Image (cartoon, rainbow, N blue to C red; front, side):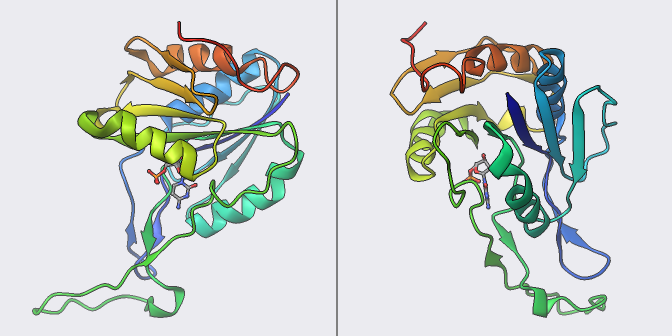
Length: 218
Ligand code: C5P
């Protein structure tokens, strides 16, 4: 098993000194990487700009990124040789076009309008070989969580998606649910991200040697 994990936020530059980011800590992705190494899986972690220390674990390769573009290039390099991708990174949905970033925006009393372009949806655009599996994440308000997660599962052509409420971001705990493309569903109790990582890899561990994701509701 070669597991590829993306984690943390992206920082999209506004100019050479400022960026647009989000509050993702990367904690869950780091826990998944640790759990994967504990299982002696070959593990590659693509990690965005986060303050958390990167664990020095046997079998773990870590590559850092700042922007969606850098993450895209790392995925192009690593994904073809991996079995399973867990796409936990909080990738920006918008960024400033490269040609509209000055060295530094001067302070102006009238304010500043920024035109943002959409970023490419990296996980939706991935090429897939037979037996390669992709798990995405949906972070949504609790009221819309399940329908929005199911929509992303289908639109992004994922094998499974972890649905978690907005409160998960930058928190210690997570209440996650896992929806598979075959219609099955697992619900995890509220627990630490470390415990959730253990639970998640137990659920996903049969890949790719076993059958594609199967199993009834627990
Ligand atoms: O559409 P939304 O951002 O909510 O989807 C979340 C999932 O899609 C996550 O797995 C995230 O890593 C991935 N994503 C991506 N490229 C983007 C935005 C999100 O791969 N530009």
